[in-house]
Length: 307
Length: 307
Image (tube, rainbow over all chains, first blue to last red; front, side):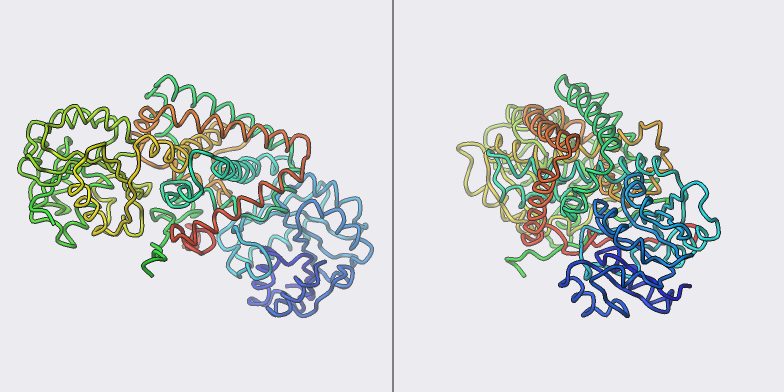
């Protein structure tokens, strides 16, 4: 599809892209760049690309597709570094979890004649780093593109086709709407998960050992999101502030109302909420975004003392 | 181990017990009772027991082990119904998620000479009903017993041995401490999950279809707990009120502090919290209470349009 694809940033997303591009022959050459020399060495040992560069300018030179996969707080710095080296007619995209902030940081650095089309694949795991990636990460997931007004339609379609070849379905959306949607489906869940794990970690009356031993009763479900990359999530919180604060306000308001129902023994109110939330999981399973097996299809793990 | 085990209530926990008792020959006879005749028919069709009873008195007569597996709000009613029929020397236990309230409801109804030993297996899935159970549910999980002062040690040990034969590890604990521990590891997570799914369901600016499509970015993890049995969880909220309110207060306090860090752009504070929560998941995996695979080891699901 492309002669040369440059991947700037080679963590979970970048390295998954490298693997699917290589597996399905989506590029003649894969050029990889990351600012940490040890991460670059790791990428080289994993044989993720064809050329390896500490300076992103060297990676993007002559590339016809450039994909920036870095924490959203570093987008502006990366754009500034690569801007002058981008080839006219190249497509530049990113995979950041916030879109308005990324556009504000990157757009001013992009020369005319380069097609800057921001994107966000709705896929990931709690792991990070070049060894965390896998080629099927984007299969049956959605990829949201947020092209700016006046974007070249052929370039948008070419990028959409690239993501389809990676296994994804495409949606096109306004950046601000993207940030509002992601605030509820992704950012708030991560913040809540981090928060509850922090609360449990701080208790005096319940030991850490008890929290760990009995975690199968619910708590462990939250620890997956709370094990996500701290740098990435710090940046998301700082760069989608307004939408996150709006969702946090609604969540807290609802929680206060639920707390009142617990305090005053309003069983009907509790029962009504607990009933209507069931339907949503069913819809997610029907939409192919979740497994239809109890406990996420988790396998029983051997007890270490018995193993 | 026992001549006759009576199971009062045959949902997820009761029917899992029936399956492991049958598979491993832990009883000569399994007597099953539930107050709904359609559920009793379902249990009979699944061949979960040897005798079936709408009146729990008939199930517990002559049983040497009686296990009550009903929503905690029904414990008192069940105890009142079966009390007069219990055999002297029999062991009576339950599996309820709250212990102080269950003891307060059941203890006054139990005749002298019957060993009442409350219990709580820390195991379950989001499914409910007789067809949701499976024999390995209790494997490598903890079962907490909360015997009262003066309980017969041989009876406690006999019940502990029964749970070990079901695959569980045993802890003995004060009922009030149990309720505090479970409030943080189980009750708060369920309430938070129900709440966030409710908040998402109520938005005007984000459609339900968007929440469902993009749920793989975090939200779907919460929907599992929020798909749990509404009656069971209404009763838990009503019967462990004080401990739950205490944990909700701590959670909300921490969330307000986190919200302030988001508002004022305190990246260091966010980074510190997001870093320390990672360690807890690692400990849970090391303790054998969670799978060591990204995404809970979920399998990729085929997209319905492509399948």
